[in-house]
Image (cartoon, rainbow, N blue to C red; front, top):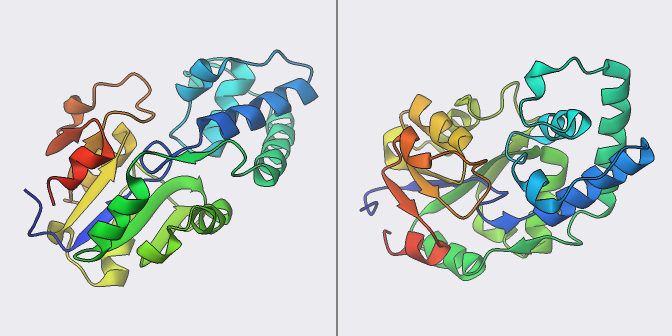
Length: 223
């Protein structure tokens, strides 16, 4: 279905790696430091996908809809620094690659240019790719902090296309959340939804991906 594409842009968390246990550990460490009750992993999974700052805000108020609360900026900044420090020190401790990802990336890299667009802070991205021995498959990667905007804004995707000199129409975005699909749509890039990641309870079909796959292996069958 996508054999005419030249560039495959991947999301990271919930797409290539299951980082929820590591993120949950960092979040709960922050909450305990602030004398607050920790949350179950299943709850924190529903808060992942919009970057570290929003994850922290959700944890501070105990609600996905953090916008409904006034969060003290001094408290947020303290929590943010604690989170980045704790997460950075335990980056890969509880994180795993999803089944079939490493061999799948190797297979795809033989015929396509691969890139990465993630809302994870950019300072963590390269280290994680190296840890899992998949950095070599990606020609270029961007994360939160690479540009002014994160997904669902299309900036990261468009900058990848520009830098790699590949038209958006010749590209496809692979991700597990509405942010990935909305960014792709805004960039005029086809998208593939992966249903096994951090979709926060959203029906990904509502965002009009060209295809939805429930495993990475299923994704490979379309290239």
